[in-house]
Image 1 (tube, rainbow, N blue to C red):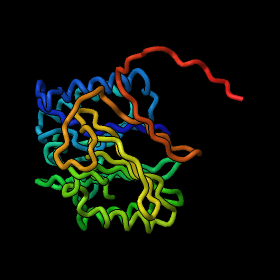
Image 2 (cartoon, rainbow, N blue to C red):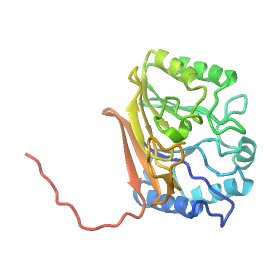
Image 3 (cartoon, helix red, strand yellow):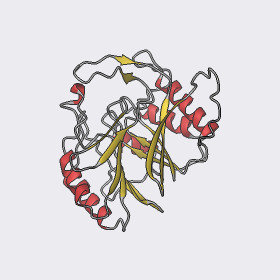
Image 4 (spheres, rainbow, N blue to C red):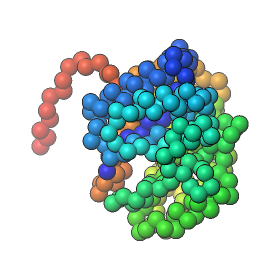
Length: 266
């Protein structure tokens, strides 16, 4: 199964710029690259911060830019989003019975879980009792294969000083349930931190983040006020198959210098 991850898009109303970049142009670049190179993907997952300020116009622009893509889409919300404005523009988006933008998808390689960690008015993530009850049910009915989790806020420590106080405040409650899931957990995929990160928890849970499609940080583990920077639009290709889980970061519009030779091997 081929899944695409786009994260931290931060759209503004048309014409808006952020840190010297136009987030809409960044997203258009990523979409054009997906159409050219990854149109056969089975699913696109947007892991939050779809809009920078939760503007209705930004969500309308998101719908417009994504319209040419042929694959189904699952949306997650981040701290910059606004759940009412998002749901008004995307009433068809999968939600749970209490209105949180979370859902699951059963595949040949196990259940995919899409969690809503958005908490209005907070930068960090929350996961309340209603959402935990939904997660308990989704895990109980997930079947015999490992699950794969998608969420905006990383539920484990990310080790970056800037995010020390604005991570997933209820992350341990989520991790406890994932650790207890007998068939196992394949991977946790998230956004929020704007830079690529991969690791494992002390209990062996594997996790990784996508790089922001829009602005990203000059990565600095110790600086609580790191610098924003730009760059080409990026997205990830996630492969889940008999060989397990693999993630590749793709850059739209990369300069082609020369072609590598075919290496036949032994």
